[in-house]
Image (cartoon, rainbow, N blue to C red; front, side):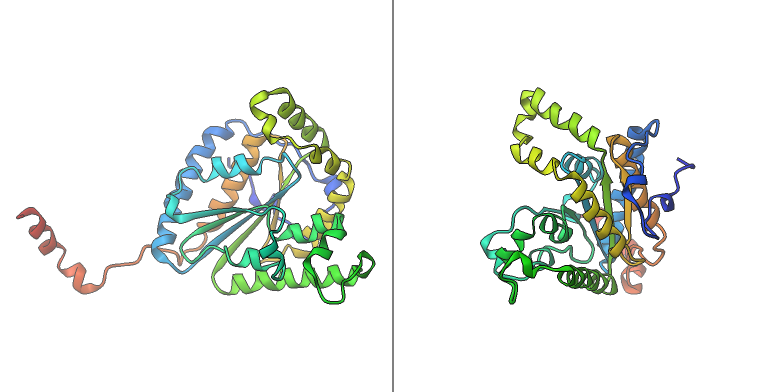
Length: 288
């Protein structure tokens, strides 16, 4: 584990996804994850008691990149009261009646808790950019046809997302954004596995194959989104996702190593009056 440097995965300059590795195998990743996720669970309890920070973990990646299983494995040691997970699918009529960030804003984690967005507000500059016709369902003023959705529209949306995240960070939310970088070949293998194993069939949708044909477009949109929105207060990390145990370990280590640098997050101390009477309280209980 000493040879893993989280800075190697942090996006601090423009990246080219074609040159970003999708496969990295760390021996003993499963056993190492057990140790780190326990430490993360302990840290979350301290953060819950401290009650001044929230943590928002954003997970993005192509279909089958391992987001669901990563959530299950990385946060297994958390107290359920301290974590909330939300998966954003096609917007409902209620959600479409508001601006596109509304449904994300209303489920942000409160202070003291972790929030996990399994697919995130970035769907609004990824799926909608590949399928701009979806934007028409938002009923935005002056957007009446697909032709009205120009580069200026996307520039403004990226600016809004950056402002949204800066506002969260300025008010105590610690933001992590992970792109699970899956190869097209590994996605094919995982889709075939869903078809070959009856117990996995329910995960498959014919739409998966339609979206797969748009692979290059999605990669271009991911690359642009990451390069435009990786900021010091809300950095992106590109995680090689072809090997699931390694991907989970890297995410857990990045969370742990970053959060332990927050020296101000500590358990609250008892006030002097209560502390001075601890022996008295013990005696009351022992003499019942």
